Image (cartoon, rainbow, N blue to C red; front, side, top):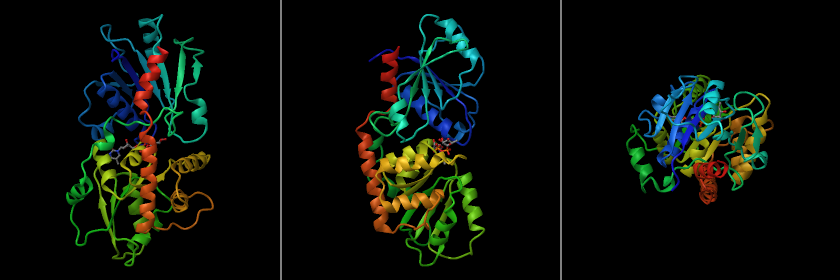
Length: 363
Ligand SMILES: Cc1cn([C@H]2C[C@H](O)[C@@H](COP(=O)(O)OP(=O)(O)O[C@H]3O[C@@H](C)[C@H](O)[C@@H](O)[C@H]3O)O2)c(=O)[nH]c1=O
C-alpha cells in the first residue's frame, strides 16, 4: 500500500451529463481506494440526482472558488478532464505551496477506439506559459485496448448483481396487461431512426412485443416528438417514462434490459459492462468526426453486419439502409458480441488502477 495522495480533479460541464458523470465516477472510485479527492466543478447540479448521497473522501468545490486554506493539503495530482483549463489562480497557489515538487498533472482525454489514442496515450507536454511554466502535463487516454488507459470499472463490478437480478428488477416495474418479451432502455439524443423504431414497434404484428423504458430529458422529448408524427396504433409497444436515477440505478436499468440504447461516453461503457445487446447514439459533431469514431468502435467491438447496419441507421450515417428491428436470434447475436467484448475488457486493468500506477511512476 502506498500513502494516499491529494487529487484535485477539474471538470467543466460543457453539455449533457457525461463530463460530470465520468468525473464523479473517477472521483468516487479514487476515494473508494483511499485517495483524497477535491472535485472542482462549474455546475454540480446533476449530482443532485446522479449521486445524491455523495461519497466519503470526495469534496465538492466550486470552480474558481476559494483556494484551499493553509492547513489543507497541497495537490499531489492534478487532473484536468476533457481539455478544461485549470484556473490560473489555483495553479499559482499550487506552485507557491510546493515550488520544488510539481504534482503529477494529468490531461484526461475523451474516450475513443481510434488509432491515435494508442499513439498519444502517456505523451508529455511542457507547459510554456502561466504560473506553472516549466511543469509537465501528461496526456492520459481512456480506451478499449491494453495500450490505452483503460475504462472506469470499480472493483467487483462484474459480480455485483445476483443471478435473477433482471427478473426481480422487472417485477418491481408497473405491470402491464401482457408481459413484454423484450425490455429495451432508451438513453439518446434525437436518433434519426427513432421514428422508424417506434413505427415498427407500434405495429400490431411487431417483431417482438417490447417494453421501452425511456429516460428523462432529450430521450423523452424525442420519443414524444416522434410519436406525434405517427398514426396512433395499438400495437405491441409499452412505453414507460422513467424519472432520473442515481448512477447505480442507471446501471441497474442497463443490467435489467435485453437491449440498451445508450449515448455519449459514460453510458456506453456502462452498457458494455452490463453485457447486453447495445446500440450507441454517438454524440454528433458538426464536422462529421463522429463517423470515424463510431466505425472504430464497431471495429473494436467486432460487431456483426446486422449491428453495424443498425448503428448506421440509428446514427443517420450517410448511405445507411432502413432500420430493421432485430428479431430474437439477431438480438442474441448482438448480446454475445457485447459479452465477448466485455470478456476482453475484463482482462485489462481499470482506468483508476492504471492512472494511480502512472502517477506513482511520474512523481
Ligand atoms: C438517464 C440517466 C443518466 N445517468 C448518468 C449516466 C452517465 O454517467 C451520465 C450520462 O453521460 P453519457 O453517457 O456520457 O452521455 P451524455 O450525452 O449525457 O454526455 C455526453 O456529452 C457530450 C457533450 C460529450 O462530448 C460526450 O462524450 C458525453 O460525455 O448520466 C444517471 O446517473 N441517471 C439517469 O437516470
